[in-house]
Image (tube, rainbow, N blue to C red; front, top):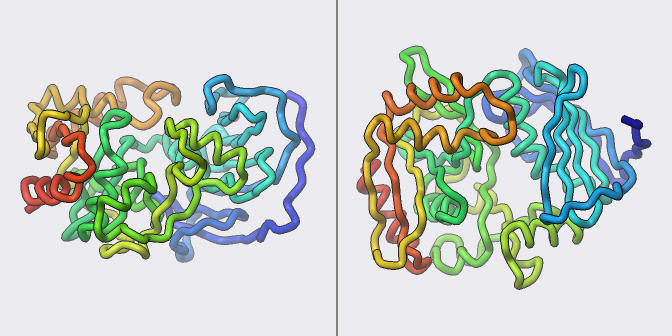
Length: 340
C-alpha cells in the first residue's frame, strides 16, 4: 500500500505524557483528558502522525470500519461518506499505535482513540472486554450493556445524575482479583449522552455538553449514525464527570452485577427485571463481547470468560419503559432493587 504524506496541524499541541486508561499505562504525543500515570512500565505507546489527504473511498452507510492484518501489523480504518478517514496501525502485540486522519481538525481523532482504538489494542494484548458501561456506587461497579436502542446511554446518564460515579463508557475491561472475582478497570471521565435526555433528568438540565467531533463533516456523519435528522446540535455528545454529583471513579472496582438491556416496552411503567439463569446469562454475555463480530476474537476464550462472569455475578435482563419521563424513576428503582 502506498504510504501517504502527512503533516502535523499548526495548532496541534504535541505532548509527551503518560496517561492511565483501562488499567493501561499509555505514553502519547496526543493530548487526552485522562489521569496522569506515575512512573513505571509503559503498556502502550500512541503516536499521532498527523493529517493525510482525503480519500476517494466513500461509505454508502454513513460510517464504517475495516479491520485487517497486513504483514505483522493490524490496521483499523474508519471511513465516512464525505471521503474522510481515520486510520490506526497496531503492532502485532498491540503495544504500539500510529494514528492518522484526513479530517482537518486534529481533535476529531480523540473519540475513536479513547474508545474503539484502545479496546482493539487491549483485545490484541489478550484482555477480556464487554461492550458495557461501568458506573460505581459505594465502591462497587454496575455494568450496563444491551442491544442498540435499548437505552444504555440514557440509563447510564440517569444513574450518573443520581450519584453514581462515572467509571467507563462503553468499554468494560475486566480482570480478576487475587480471589478470582471480576474487577473492571477505569476508563475516562466522560460519558456519551444525547442532548435531548438532559431535559428529563433533573441533575443534567443545563449541563455543559462537548461535541464528540469538531469538524462539520464529522459531526454530520455522527448525526446520521445516530439516526438523527434535526441538526448537528442533536448528535450524541460528551458529558464530563465534573458536571455530575459522583464525579469520576479512577480506580478498579469489583463488579456487583450486570444489566443486559432488552427492547423498551410501551406497555410498562416500571422496569421489568429478570435474573438470568447461568446458561442464559452466559449466552447473553457472549452477545456483548466487545468487537465480537469484527475483531476476530478466539471464540473459546470469549466463552470461557463469560462462563466465569456468570458463575460469579448476578446477571439481569432488563426492559425499560419506552417513556423518557420515567427514566429517573426507573434508575432509582433499579438501584434499590439491585444494589440497595
